Structures are given as structure tokens and as C-alpha cells.
Length: 169
Image (cartoon, rainbow, N blue to C red; front, side):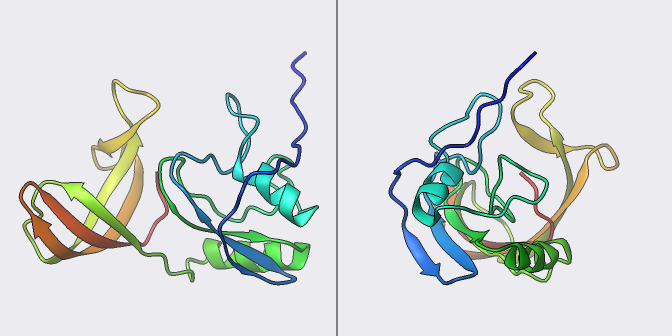
């Protein structure tokens, strides 16, 4: 029998960008796990949100109260959490219907050839490093489509803005 821990509030500083009675928007720094999971039960954004907000709705996902979307541990960016069941349902639907527009800025290795383009590839588990994801043969992974524009070029690197159409790791 495996007993899973209960999510506990924890006083972890948050950079709050917006908060009202229905939602909270937080700037998540890199190397900060969004919600508890195997191997990382504590010191997550959810622990910090529970401390700050007191309670959050968790329809069907006890380790993800308030969470309507996530970004990878290593990625920084805005996370929106719902503070009510009604807001949770409405925001979740917007992400499911892909009416939310997301944009990322990144420095990528290599000098990108085109000023702007569409990347349309399948993403799946890396063949040798299972914890990582990689571009895989079409039809063997999940489709990932993003639009990008080069903002600035450097020797060996490119500064880009990316608008994902599909949310993938």
C-alpha cells in the first residue's frame, strides 16, 4: 500500500502579477515545479498558492488545486490559477478550446535561417533519455505546432518569440 502525501500550504514567495476574487496570475521562475507529483511532493507552486490563497478548487485532481494549465519546471512564465470552481471551469475550457494565446521568448542555440516560420513536428519521448522529449518520426508522437519570429540574431544563437498552437513539453 502506497500512501500519497496530502498537499500542504508552504510559505514560498510568489511574484503575483494579478489577483482578484476569481483567479491569480503568478510569474513562475525557472526550476520551480508547478504541482506535486511522484519524486517532488513539496516546495511546488501549488504549496505556495495554498499558503497565499488559503484554499483552491481541485475538481478531480487533488494534487493540482487551482491549476488550469502548467509550464515545464525549467520554464519561466505566467501561470494562472483559479480561486473558484466557476473560474476553474471557464479557464480550463478556454485552454481546451485553444482560445488562450500564449507567447514565449527564448534564446535558442543556432542561427535560425528564416525570419519567421511555422514548426510542425511530432514530439515524443527521447529514444535514449526517457525523461526528455524530442522531435520524432511523423505519426509516432503528438503533433506540436508553433509559429516563431526572430527578434535578434547573435553568433551561434537566435532570440525568438514563439506562439505555440499546441501545448507540448
